[in-house]
Picture: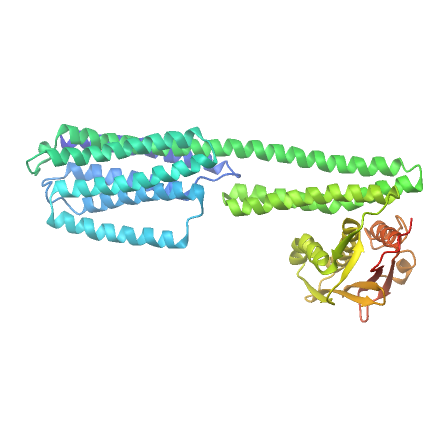
Length: 482
């Protein structure tokens, strides 16, 4: 009898061990989605628990007062069940530090309680205690899986929920059998066949739960691979399209206006497209690390949407500029607009370790086209960032000032970079000028075109000490130039 029960436990341990080895081997070939550490730890702990329990049954002489290894085995079963529940919880949200601490304390408490029960109580009490504890964990797991199913349909999670429900059924069955028998069990031979059946059934369902979780992981790997391939193809197509657009538009420069429009679109779209590419790469990395929680996912997707909308806005704005369409004026708070461009450029500012110094007078309100003015300010900010990215210096600073000057608002962008050579200063604002400060000619030409169209002025001044300083003046009451 004892040998037969031991064999059951050893067989289940071997099956789970095969699953663990298969998962580990497959894990090494995956870079996008890694299996949950809670699942892996639960599976490994369950294997050790089954082996320990199976070996303990062979040497068992008194079922009422078993050896210490039964405390170890049952503690391992509890840890495995709790880790599986934590895995399910991690599907909905990140496991908090408090929950991790509570899990650790519960393990210590379980070990102490079960060891006391091993020494001072009987087989029936210990089995009912384990069945009741397992039922609570399974109930929690079923509730968690229900919440996850509302967010995302998955056949594997449905199978896991079925297996967990059967685990709970068999655990309750063990409790029912023990409450119905009248005599005290002191020998293995006295254990009811129905109790053995329910115990083995519960362990089999636990094994099926691990298999279902493995299926869920494989399902996520397949989904991630498809998404990654789709995103890679989209990025490649986008980059190829951008290169083709630049080459085609430059070759088709039949008139100065057409050529300027073409080059301006290519130049202005580089920034939002580059930002989108970086966000997609960041999203892929988080998917690979298995660290993509809901809040981070929403933040990245919001950034991608904002970059897409900004690209569309740039195209509409440039088309309006070159077609000399009537400018749509709105009341713009300059302080808010400057904050918005700093938010757009914030990743570059942080990565280049640049300090931003703002000196803005209050009530900087003017009537202008928000999208076109945003392009001008963002170009000036990006030029300053690029200038500082070319130097090795601990202190990198961009100063942004805005003040009222008569009936105008004057805006200044100054950096402490290497400055602009005297040779380049003479044609900074020329279209596609051949400048050592690459990337500035087109952007500054477009800035002057937009500012002049709004009846304003833009010019360059050397920054005292070092660096470059660009200033622009815009009328509070616009004097539009067509």
